[in-house]
Structure formats: structure tokens, C-alpha cells
Image (cartoon, rainbow, N blue to C red; front, top):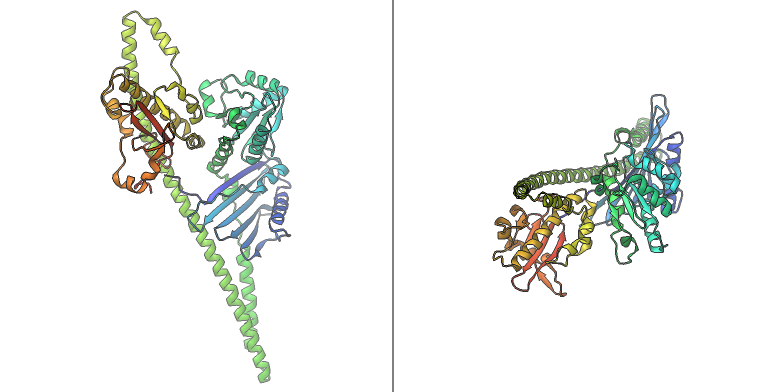
Length: 568
């Protein structure tokens, strides 16, 4: 099961404090970008320009009541065999002198069922480097800004700034220089230019000063990179997991590609950010249509003039008729081109609207699923609290208050990400986890990742608890273990357990449910636990119960919902 494809695949919005030269700079940088792309100078005057057989450039401008230009838009449409690609650059300066804003959208309208991935337009990095935009107190840059120990408090101000709207990446240089780490981190910082502010703790003195300033929970250790979301609260330890930390091993292991998820997550957040009102409300007059109307009026006037003047000789009349026919044919050709272009624009608009409707439906489905999940979780939490209160009361009545305090202080936390979950698999001594961690780690890029990771850990703990009970003599299966748990058990909500798949699903999609086993062989797994009731991702954990046979319980998959007859 996957999220419905959106035609909008990249969006960057940057704010510029000084907008005096914003429009000219955006036009100039766009022209340079187009010149590199088409290997020739490109006309940027207001109107529509055919650059080649498959590329059309639309340039527009908007003016205020005093006749001063306050907005510009440059849109490139490329009709290629695999898809139509549309890049839109819009810049608007404030008419009250409050700076300006620029946005770059990249859209993809596929012509086949093949999944396409477009790269971030290099124009965005060019604009960031030239315009030096801001995000609250933070300055956006192409490369990470160096932070020494005496500048740490300025960085802390940036992180806690309530006006900051986009993520901030903070990296700490490793103790020992590592070229792979440097290449990957530098590439990531360049990749998120325009979508996040980036900083580099330059040495150990800066790392120590930052830890001292922000606290242990929000620290960034040498070799690590943390993505700080807006509204950081250093005084609240529970806030730290919201700002994902990626350890140094992910950046220095040549076989590990998890580090790529940092930029993907930032790009996803940029897409989810509402378009600022300045960009969404600006209106551009349709000067192309007006130009075409004027040309048609002039051509019609010429045709009427030819028809109204009497011919003196037969030859002259033939020449006039031929001229009139040529003019009318020119009008027809122009009308055909306009109708074709209009039809193309309508088609793309309809596809974009359909994509938006699909995305909206997906959001509604996710919301409904989250509500159902939260209600289930609250129910399980209430039961757990009631049981804990009863046990605590029994211990207190027996005069064992010290044990109550010790138990409360030693309660382990839950992982805040699937990466952290994987690091704690060693605590589950009765499970064999063969699931592909790369698939699981991709879940960390989703806004619901913390909830899914917490439920995923709960699911694995329940499986581990069952395996231990089965080895100790529990006779039932996992479902019975959760519906009638023995003393000391850690069950999983029965409503979120499915021990089999439907026969039609296995007939058509059974191959998706064959997963690796510890010995290298592969086995079919149908039993699974739901980490989300429904939604576009709806993660699942698939397992094979061989405790009473081979003495093992194998978890072969943790990741997005697999294909079935309902989700296909």
C-alpha cells in the first residue's frame, strides 16, 4: 500500500528580507539556469515562447496600482515521452517594504505507470546562494554554516526561535576525519538548501559548548547529525525524540544508505508546508491571450479590407483572394495552436486537481486511522494503569514501598524511531529478527514514525513475551496469549492481530509475504500485527511462530502495508 502519487514532487519557498532587487535577480538566475539547460540564450520577455518542439516557456508579470512591477512568474513546461515536467518560479515583493518571497515548484505528470523521481532543480541552490534568504533568525545557505564554541549561543537562539518554520540540521564533525562522512554530510546540506538551515559544530570545543547550552537530551555528539524541528524546548527531555538524531555509523558505513533519509524527510516537510499567502494569492494578467486576441483582430481587419475593395482586373482579384485565404489560414493555424495549448493546460490542471483530491482522501484516511489507533492505545493504557495500580497497592500493603520506587525508576522507555528500535533488538532474547532494516528505517521519514516505532516496539515485546511463555509451557498460540494472557505477560491488542491472510490475497500477492529466515532460507509468513489500523502506509509486522517446533519465533518484515485485494 502506498501514498497516492502527487503531481507536485518538489517545492521550495524562501523569504528575503531585502526585496529591492528580488524580481531582477530571480529573472536573471532563471535565465542562467535555462541557458545551461538549453545551451542557448532564452527569451524571458512577457509572453509565451516555444523553446523547441517539446518545451514551452511562459513569462508573466504583475503590476500594482502605480504601475510598478511587484511579482514575476517563469514557467517551463517540457513534454517528454515519459512525462510532462513543469517547473514554476514565482517571486513576489512586498508593496509595503517588508521583504519578499520566492518559490520554486517542480511538477511531474507521468504518461506511463512507471514511477518517476525528479531531482531537485539546481536553480533553488543558485537562488539561495544569491539571495541569502532567512528563516526567522536563521540564514539559509548552500553549505553548512560553521559554528565555533563562541557562537553556540547564537545557534541556540536559532533553534528556539518561534519564528523559525523550517527544520534546522546540526552536524558535529567526527573526532577522526572521515572523507565519506564529509562527502555525505556536505552533499546532504547542499541537497536541503532552501528547505532547511544547516550548521556544523566545528570542533570538540563547539560540541561540548553546545551540549552544555542545550542539555544532554538534545545534544549532537561527534559524527552525528540532528534534524531540529521548529519550537525546540531544551528544558523538556521528552521533546528530544521529536528531533531525529542519526548516529555517526550511518554516515561512515559505505553499505548503509539510511543517511539519504535525512534529505528526503526535509523535502517531505517542505512539500507539506502550506504555500504562503503572498504566493498563493498573486494574480497574473493573461497577456498571452490578449496578445493573441489583438493579432486576430488585426488579421480579421486585413481580411475585411481585402474583401471590401473592388478588384480592377481579374489577376488582381486572384491575388487578393490568395492573400485573403492566406490570412484566414493563418488565423485557423493560430486558433488550432491556441486550442491545443488550452487543451494541454486544462488536462494538466485536471490531473493536478485529481492528485490533490487523492492526497486529501489519503489524509482523511490517515486521520481516521490515527483516531482509531489512539482510542485503542488509550484503552490498553487504561488497562495497564489499572493493573499497575493494583500491583502497586498490593506491594504497599505488604510493606514493600522500596520495590515500588525501584520499579518506577527502572522502567525502560520506548524507542522514538525504528533506527533506535533496531539498536535495542538485543533486549528481545526470544526473537529472531530477519526483517530488512532499510525498509523499516524508511518509516522514520513519515510524520507518524514516532507513534509507529513505539507500537512496533510494543508488538515485538509482545512477541518476545509470548515466545518466552511458550518455551515455559504456555499451550496456546499468540492470539490466545493476547486474549487470555498468563501472569506477567505483555500482550498486544487483539483487534490489531491477524493470524492469516485471505485466500484470494495469498493467491495473487502471496509472493510479497515470503521473507528470510535465520538460516538463509525463505518462508511464507501470514500472521501479522498492525501498527496502524488504516491509512496510506499502515505499517505491519509479519512473523512466523515456530516456538513449539523449531523453538524460534521469526520476525521477517516490518514496513508499509503490503498489497492485498482491498488496497490494490
